[in-house]
Structures are given as C-alpha cells and as structure tokens.
Length: 554
Image (cartoon, rainbow, N blue to C red; front, side, top):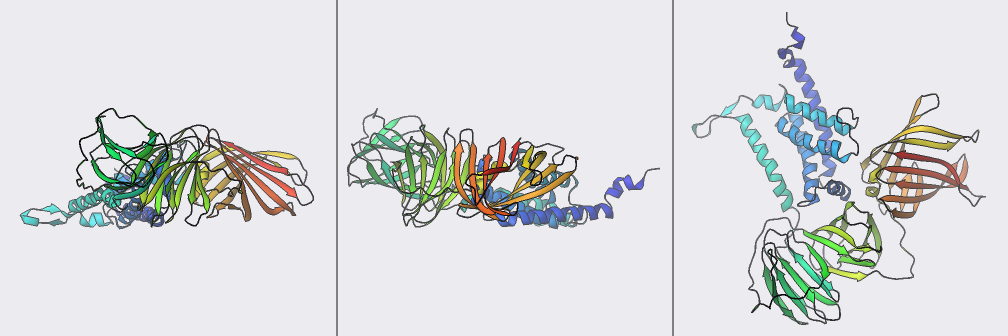
C-alpha cells in the first residue's frame, strides 16, 4: 500500500502549501529589504558591479537593474505572482554573487547566505508558488478578448516578461542628456580623438579659443583619413562624422591648443590623446555639411584613456551639475584619482591598482584629476555620466609644490579584497605569562554597508574548543579616520605596492593591559593575503611593541 505522506497528493496538500507560503514570504521579505536601500545605487554598489565586468552600456544601468530585480522580485515572491519568472531572474543574480563574486565558491557545500538564497530560488523555479498564491488563484481563470479564450496566468506572465524586457530601456533613459560641451587642451605634437565605436553619427561644433591653429580630420570606420580643414585661432566650424568614424583634432603649432567643442549625440563616444599623425590625403574641397542625428542610447561618454608618466588628466571644472566617473584600470600601474573642488581644495578619492575598477561622484564645479606618478604609461577605460555642460579636458604635467601633502584617505571599496573566507593564525603575547601563543584561526570578511567591514573570527584554542569574535570597522566619510571596535584611528599612511597589495597604517589612542597607550594597526591586504599587526606604545616609551599579528591566506 502506498504511503500517503510520500505521495504526490501529499506534496500538493495543505502542508506543502503552507511550507511554500512561509518559504516564499521569507525569501520575498529578504529581497525587498536587500533591494530597497539600493534603488538609488551608491558609488560602492556601482563599483562592485563594474568590477564584475558589467560595464556595457554602463555599470549604473546594471546596478539599477540588480536593485530593482531584488525589490520587485521580492514583492512578486511575497504575492506568489509570476513566481517562476521572479525566481529565474533572482537565481541568475545570486548565481553571479555566489559563484562569480566570491573567490572560491563551493558549489554544493558552500555556506554563504547568498548561496543558500540561490538554491532557494532554484527550488521555487522547480516547484512554483504553491496552491496558496496569486499564481494558483489565476491558474485556470480565463478571459475572452475578441472571442478568443486565453489564460489570465499566461497573460500575466506575458506582461511581466514585457516589463522585464523594458527595464534596460528604462534604465538607459534615466541616465542623462545626449550632448557634450567641453574645452579640450591639446599639447604640442599631440592630437585629440573622439569617437570610433559609436553606433550612430555625431556632430561637432568647434571654436578655436587658443593661440595656435588646429586641423580637424575624419578617420572613417574603413580607415580612410579625410581633412575637414584647418581652424585658425578665433575661428569656428561645424562638421558631421559618420557611424564608427573618429573626429581627430591635431595641434599644428608650437604652443598648447585650446578648443571649445559642442558635440551632439555624444552617447557612447570614446575619447583620448595620441601623438599627432601627418595627413595622408589632400584636404576636402569644403566644409562638411551640417546635418542632424538622433539617437536613444544612454548619454554617457566613454574613453580609452592613456596618461603618460609624470602627468595627470583633468576632467571637468566649471560645469553646473555633478557628474560621475566609472573607471577601470587596464594598465600595469596604479592611478590616483582626486577631486579638485571649485573653491580650490584638492581631496583624494581613490587609488585604482591594475585591474581594479571604481565609480566616483564629483560635485558641481569640481574636476576629476587622474594622476600617473609612475614611470610607465597608465591606461584606463572611463565612462562619464551626468552634467556634461562645459566639461573641460586636459593633460598636464604633475604639479611640483612644497606644500604639505593632503592626508591619506581610505575607502570601504579599497578593503573589498577582505570579503572572503580566510585561513591562518593569530600570534599574540599572553598578558599574564608574557608567553607567545599561536592559534589556528579562520576569518570571514563581510561588508553590510559601503563604509562598514565585519571581520568574523573563529579561534581554535589549544584544547580544540572554538571561540568566536567579531571586529567592526567603520570608515569615515572623508576617509581620514577609521573606527575599529570603539577606538578612533587616524589613517597615517596608505600605499599601493606591486601585485595589487594595499598597505595601510592606522594610529589611535586607547588602552592596552589597562594602561593608556597609542595603538598602531598595520593592514596588508591583497587578493591572496591578509595581514593585520597590532603594536602599542606607552606614554613613557618611544618605541612601539608588537602585541599580536594575524596572518591569513586563501
């Protein structure tokens, strides 16, 4: 006789319906709470998306889709409406998080919360919402438009699918304007290039506001070079460039050239500087006729940027609104990114080591300054969104000044390599016996907010028992201070070393063994190594004494 508790009827019965309802409610509430704070994506969240490679057409679009996918998907799970559709997109999102974002995921044995959520969405994809859901209520109900019978459930799924397909277009349309006004500075012997990969044509209105003449050329998608004409100082011209073509502005003089450019249909354009090339074809017989173009792509500006050793690239300054720069370092040297405030101050924003990406916001009137202090050429992919009005671009020599350098600044994103499972040891000095003790230690790094890092420790004592502890690090908004377990530390130094190694030194006032002391913590962090050393210095002493150090690998 068949066991009724193991039959398909039991699986579809009230107990299964209740279990699926509670399971859906749990997953749905978790997703709504996860997606709601990210509906306006932060720089930190956008940086994480960019680091995963989701950069086309822009990481902002993918961050927006991920946030709304969690929020809207959670509501759909709570209602049990379009459950399998929600489970498909959420399982994709959490597959990326669980098995792509984490460094060493275990497919079946991983214990990350994100992995458990992924398998939960896979289960709902297989089972559906259950009988206590909007899907079940709609199932079998019909409507008869134009004399034809159709399932309401089918129609609902179709509408939901159309909404999901429309989301990328909605995201794209929310990203800004479609024009670019800029002042371009071109050094002697250099040329400025614009375009080359765009899907539509674009128009350039140029005004030579500098002391030397420039030549404007068009390099077609087939490689043909056509001279539009020479633009003397004080003169203006307009030209239209076709799909896939590049506009090239060449400095013909022995002084720096300055050009005001107004570009229509700037969506998706790349830009950059290179050594000037001689003309290979005779000039065109007359100016290129002015035409009009139209496009619906997101308004962003893309650049394959190179910065020579000892130089800096400035973008912005004087524009009326804020703008955002998403940068990916694809070169072999680190690049410092700073913000030149409209009032004259200069603050550090981030340091991008090779292979690292980041998203940074710049205020109205401010300029983004990208510095290459190394002896090799720096290469970056840039995507700029926001207010393009009067956006200035220039490559300059790094300033040499005797002024006091700005204090080092740390960001939560620069600690993102800690977000993994680590294994290693803690070595410390016993306060009572003064003996050195070494414990096997496991560590998990988590980041619940862009400015908060959680370090969860699992210590194995000599008697094989386990003790657990958590350290919490808060990075101040200006990046100059870190609060680490109720002690305020100043960021004394931050250095990027070869091999994507971050070295940070923190110092703060606290207590050690019930005695007032200056506490120094040194962090050495890379994708494969994590070291933390604690040193103390008492008021009567001048030298720091090592108290403990953690050493982890993965």
